[in-house]
Image (tube, rainbow, N blue to C red; front, side, top):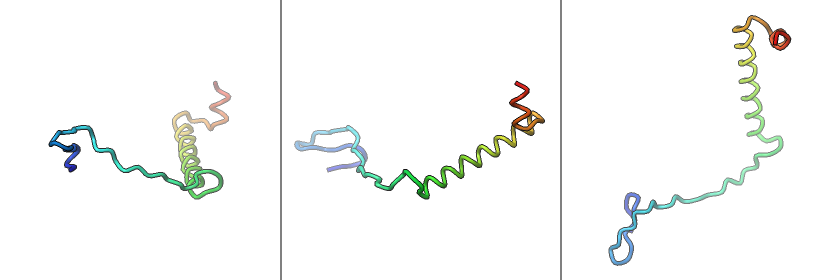
Length: 70
């Protein structure tokens, strides 16, 4: 018998260890030119582009000017 995170075993003994969740294996391909890889690449490119815009607004220089002023 299972109820709310604990288990009652034979002889009405309480086993209050957590009931393990059911496990599953995600067998989708995550390498190569997949839809997942393209979405991730696009999102990272958008983050990089916005970061460069913020850098230019804050410093007043573009990326080349910022790198040469270091």
